[in-house]
Amino acid sequence: MDNQVLTGKTRKGFGRVDRTEISSPEICLTCGSQELSEVINIHRQQVATLVAKPIEVVEYQTQSCKCLECGAVVRGEPHQGVVPGQDLSVNLQALLVGLGNYGHLSYAKLTELLWELGTIEVGVGTLQKTNQRVAAAVKPAINALWEWAPLQSNVHVDETPWCVMGVKEWLWTASIEGFCLFHAADTRGRVELETMLGKEFAGVLSSDDFSVYNGVKVAAQQKCLAHLRRHFKKVLELPGNNNAAVAQIFLSLIDEAFIAHESWRKTKDKLTYDSWVQDFKIRLNQALATWLNLVGYSAGMKNK
Image (cartoon, rainbow, N blue to C red; front, side, top):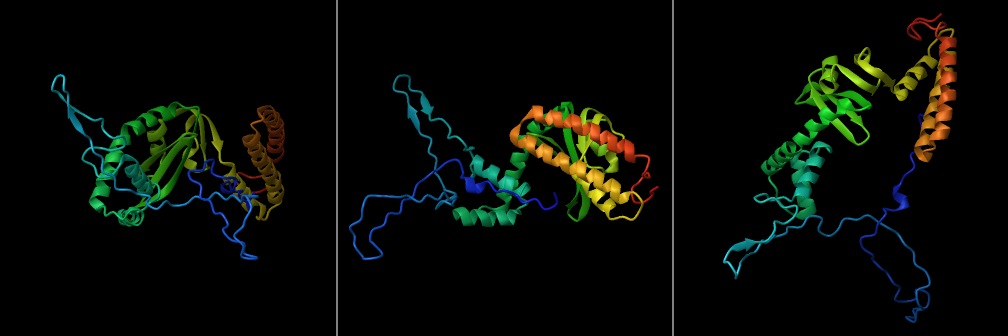
């Protein structure tokens, strides 16, 4: 499980072809003749490539005309993706904001990128204002998501150190399939979790084993098996009467759970997966019953 080899998807193709370039032979490289037959074979290779001008400077003209019947002046419809008074299109602004915030590119690097891709000069002030505009535009949707998240049946939470101008702060996240919300905070305390999901959460809270999640009022808790496996790997190396034995038992169960879940994600065979779950629960409870009274409160630190 520690040395998994990731299988790539790119070599399976991209699912579309935007343009076809054809190379045909003009001369026989063996004898020099130009008398060649019809095509007898085609070798195909799909390649993702940069186009000549990834960024174009487009002049959008909106024309006005005068109605010959009533004399009113009518104007053409606004161009899609263009905001009056702004120099960057909506999709380019979205790309820059994504690269800046998600990709952590500085304003200076973004100006270099714009020059490389489009030979255009864009000032840092324009990028700053773009970031501010997009932040204001998405704020209502994000607030609505924060109201919606605590109503879900399952939410994954986590936190990580976040350095802001040399000061250590914390970036919290709440997510399930389809969304991921971030909460910037000064602390790693319970108050931040309550700010995100409330003092009580009626669903299943999925997290690592950080102590702040213990004792939270939730319907149930789901702990990260990768973290648990890491702890048992450490226990396996510790001296003691039962450390190695208990570690081997639970490492085997955890690895089995990973394999079974991966199989279900690939096949979506719920009947087979549910059958395995029922059998797994029995064996897991048996292992807990067998070892719970044979190990101390903290494996490796106090062991009978």
